[in-house]
Picture 1 (cartoon, rainbow, N blue to C red):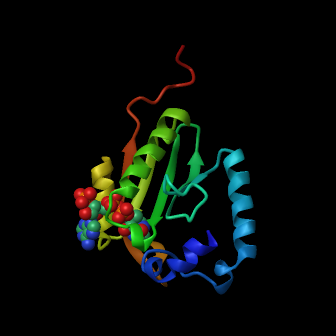
Picture 2 (tube, rainbow, N blue to C red):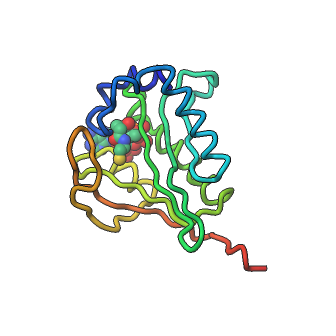
Length: 168
Ligand SMILES: CC(C)(COP(=O)(O)OP(=O)(O)OC[C@H]1O[C@@H](n2cnc3c(N)ncnc32)[C@H](O)[C@@H]1OP(=O)(O)O)[C@@H](O)C(=O)NCCC(=O)NCCS
């Protein structure tokens, strides 16, 4: 992860929150990945990394993070993702998210995955559209990205096969 964020620092700067210097240290990532594991065990998030089939030990070439899992009447989560700049535009994030969303719907029985993008993020818009995400709204000053509050298009994908735990 440290290699991934370090090598993609410039590429991701436009699309992510400003990162402090310690974001690029092993100590931070040891702590962060321990927290990710604990969150996964509590069912609060699942953060996945993309690996090439022929290099399953790495390097990491992308990430997709499903966070803020809420159960009860909502059964939903937020999705964020990024791809190593050297592997963009090959359909790899589409392939990865197709499988990850199948896991979220079929294995975790979530009902809604929400993903939001800045209007000028044409690649992200295209990717979500291809995956079947539907535009649900537009939020002004929604997330603090690249040092300022930025408007976002709000989209979501719902699971038509969601199973109620109360149905026999
Ligand atoms: C968004 C991102 C994850 C897409 O990853 P990717 O592996 O390139 O995605 P895919 O190749 O599966 O799909 C991208 C689509 O956008 C299209 N695309 C590429 N460049 C584009 C551009 N400049 N304008 C419009 N569409 C573009 C591709 O052609 C592809 O569509 P297609 O399959 O119909 O040809 C990657 O570009 C990235 O990491 N961006 C920076 C971080 C980011 O934006 N994260 C998301 C924040 S909401």
